[in-house]
Length: 254
Image (cartoon, rainbow, N blue to C red; front, side):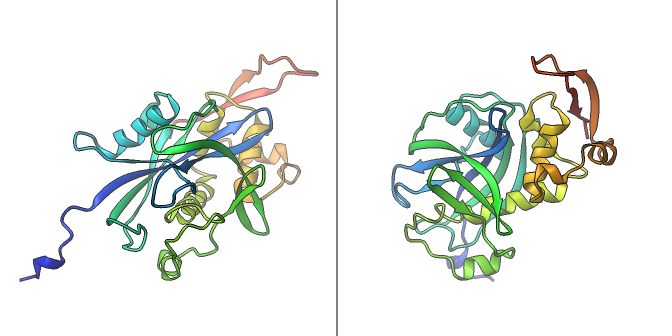
């Protein structure tokens, strides 16, 4: 019989949400970070989190987090489960299991720091030197080079470090980026950040940053041809602009 003294019966369960959006003014993909108000990791930037309640599922908790932190009521189509993170080193206090979700916002609302945070900001998602970055003015974070979770946690440190996100959130958002990149050509749910309809230029911009390619390196005609199974043409844009209105598309239902 197993020694029940070593059975972890009631770990805390939190929902970590990687919330993406798109800034049409600057043609940039953005990710939401909050600055924590309390320990551990006080005043350190982190992904938004909430504890799962007794009367809700993990999916419901992920949508509640968006509703409470941002004030948006989203349908489940905008949220997908990413992965579960259970390493015993990931929290410095009580053992906590994280169920990570990704949420794709069809708009980019103004942010107000909610409970547990002193600030909330959109960070521009870019790439540099084969890594991905999150940047807001002079504050910048880099994706982890370690693809394997065991390697990541082997040298994981729990003390405050302004160059890292709190907890293991550098790993979590790096895993999110890999998931999105791997699904670009057959199930690009990330394009939900562009709203109901979008131009090919906007879609190429999103594909480009995750593929680490500049917009000029993605030929428009080839892009359209190679992704006909993903996009559905919807007519022309009604936005005022110089020259011929751009064709608009929507994401096919998978």
